[in-house]
Length: 115
Image (cartoon, rainbow, N blue to C red; front, side, top):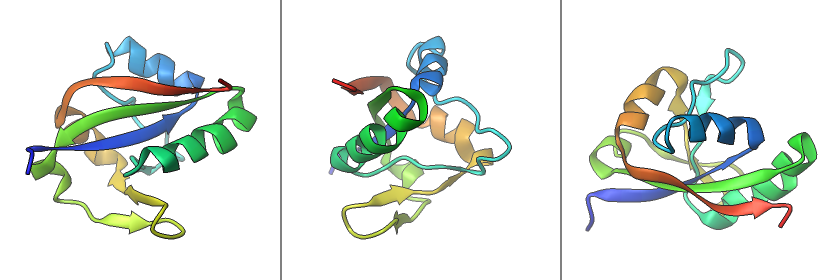
């Protein structure tokens, strides 16, 4: 077993700009109306969100991939958000700085929509 877990995060262009501004090292703070940060457990689920939600909402969608320390993420449950294909972690906004500190390496953009 490795010491990290690979997760994905679908983002729109605004969030991607903020990630880029961090040197691809952290996700931006949540807005007041966003009390939860939702990294997902599969690339397929992230693609669905980026393509089907982010593109209509903001004109573009991106799938990011990153590794997080297994010891950190073990403190949170995987939640089913509509079935086994839609699994995600629910990280409270106030825990996002600690989540960012647990990211190992860079956040990568692995898919872009529209393609």
